[in-house]
Image 1 (cartoon, rainbow over the protein chains, first blue to last red):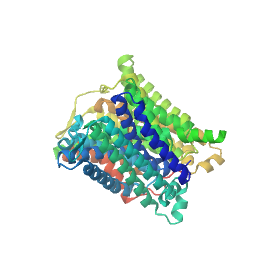
Image 2 (image 1 turned 180 degrees about the vertical axis):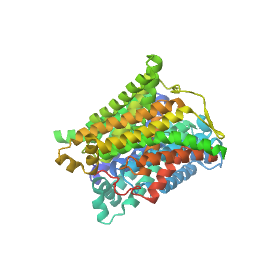
Image 3 (image 1 turned 60 degrees about the horizontal axis):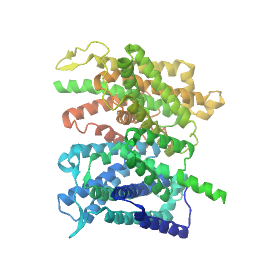
Image 4 (image 1 turned 120 degrees about the vertical axis):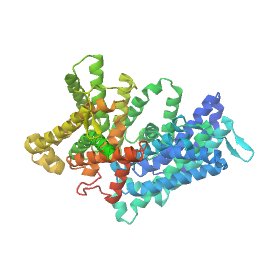
Length: 315
Length: 291
């Protein structure tokens, strides 16, 4: 199930992605499509991190939107309240997410599968409640305004500029993820997925590895959340909700488990679907549910790995 | 002290629902080693379908309740047939995603068919509160508690005195050995899902006059029912009764004395606590992982 490509094809794939991101603006007619592309890339960033957890390590998180929202609210509060420069607030938010993931992950990641899934689900719901109720910090259910992303006198406001910043962040996110996957840490991760007992027997600290991947994926979500909040200039508790978490999982599942580029494809497809069709909102739950059940029952590897296998078989 | 009695009654009432949902988790877990994340949706189906049949079709309450229960049982059976049966060789992650997907799908279908508003069911009997000391108790609470007692007695009789129940116990203890002695474990799995769906629906029907119902209540109820079942030990359906009542009471007390906004956090904190104190679950005999 896992990608076992060498370093070279990896480099080509990343170059291909960077090229696609560089060329895409030529085909984007107006700011609506820039906004769409930015949202797709931010979702993709979350999914790359989440995929390390679900796809590679085989550990599921049903509360990842919580980290997305921690990043977003941290950026909003630290820039507006404490006057921190936006990049610093983003890093601080990521640090907070990492800390929360560490503290929560330590007890729950000692357990497998179902317990972990249920615990992350509960964790997500609790943080959603916090964002709803702590109106002083978060503005409550109505949400709060987020200051512009500014470094000194430089203010990032045009969507075209945002496109390049987010595109750069996505490529960086892919590079880091691929490096992680190809490292000893990545091999241990895949081992967790395939044969946890064996990995444990050869002396790998299984619990520590799981906590580390949970923290890493939380940081991915947090950074994406910070950027999202600054692009939108607004954030609501909806970004931390259960359905948002399910959206992220659906993107990973749709694109393909253990496939970094699959996660990007899944994020792109689902984001376009959500944003383009107005009627989609009414049928959102049905669509998400159907994708999850159908993909898992018919092609558990996901779209991208399934297609990749079909093509390589034809050769 | 007067508040305490009120909170206690309220906790016992909602705890009964968590207990019945927890029993449902336990029945499916025993038959298949699967945690069914769609468990809470059966509670939602029970309440929603009953109200719909009662108000739109003018069905008598008892008939509406039976049809709603059958609908939930059928939904659960379809879930088992379509997804779980097919993916039995799959990893736990795959099964979790399938049941989570099913739960989102179910709530989506109900949302489209019946809408996003709250649904109310009239109390089954008298609506005059019964005053005990300084606390007042809604008569509907007795229906809820009575249902829990009936479910517990029914389960005890079923597992202890019927062939089907004994087949279920045998499958839970060792599915391979059960197959060797001629038990159709696939059928046990199928009926376990159906029974679990029906139980959830019954809980949903009796609690709706007190709490109202909505298309999206399933997740939270599922989480709390799960909490009930891990306190009692997933493998032991009767443990979920103590677990559910415990969660309900602690939650009501926390909501009353500490913070009503964060009372939903109680179930999650209990889950964390159980996992920290006994990482393998309260009853280590039942391994958490499905191999």
